[in-house]
Image (cartoon, one colour):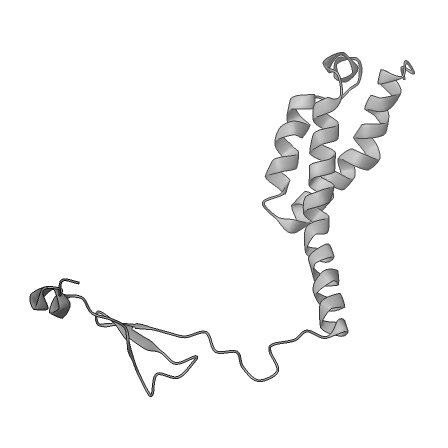
Length: 131
């Protein structure tokens, strides 16, 4: 088997360990220190309480986005003639709902107002009950 060129061997740098080279140690490659991911004590498992807290926090954080998405999709699927026969404008709500998502309180207020006040009026007009 032919031997590699010694000049080439000098140019190729292999990672050299810092601080002993054991598992989970930082390594230096071409002058850049790579930090090893070492688990801290007790971080390798999750408790039931921690899991339930994460699920509850995720649900609370996603609720305004879900409500706004529901309101936006509902406003988009209503036919134009139902909007024309009611006292509301579809384009206003299709712009206001995504704009309200930019702020938490604004998104909740605008989406709730649409779902509680405007949606029933449009649905009634769509069903043939004109006011």
